[in-house]
Length: 257
Length: 66
Image (cartoon, rainbow over all chains, first blue to last red):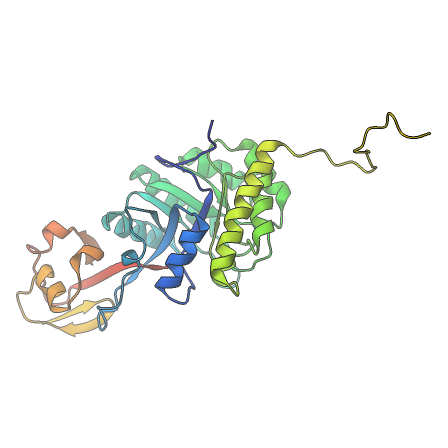
């Protein structure tokens, strides 16, 4: 049976979700996303520059026919703002799946958990497919799952920090009790971080800076694709247990006397 | 008359509807969403929605972001 990733109302081949910020230009964004193999891409909702309306539009480069466009609520600091942003995004006609993030603090960009829960309740009731960005807190994950979110997305480390999976044990607890996909969102720095997330059993990984901020974003996009695939396969294969002492790999019988 | 568009005060002709304003601003309607005084105005309703003094209009679209 092929290993596919079910999220919301669709089935995907790729378990890597990429965001579209911080690239040099739309051309680079497009190329990196193609190479990453991602089928879901996040976008932000912002005011049109009315003094320069002819600027190119991101969707001219990332066709909603080819990709699932996942609007985010980046920059929202209250539940109200996040809900308003989601309603606007839905009106744009790219579907009803959204990445909910309600930021609690400028310096850490950690989520405001109570506000995230509040917004999630409203959005689920309004028929959105809600993917919330949260801290790696199993209780919050449980609550959001109970509300009806379609996934939970714990951070591995602060957004853009590249610190990797800071608390794999919490991620494991979240995974153990999850009845919805668990997607590591934020903190991945390099391909091994993505692989570790997948080896833990996460269903997907979401990232932006690790690719867009690399010296060679296109090459890193490929590395991330391979990292996610390697980690997923290793998880499915079932790794060996860790032991303190050696176990010989060659037969012990027939050794020359 | 004066209205607010994306946080900026703008002088526009009386009787403009939203569709006409977007055309005036040279904004492709297919790629944007319009909110008037905190209410979303669907594309179909843009032509029949006239603007009045003091209206607060937000015109948004998708940009790269994470």
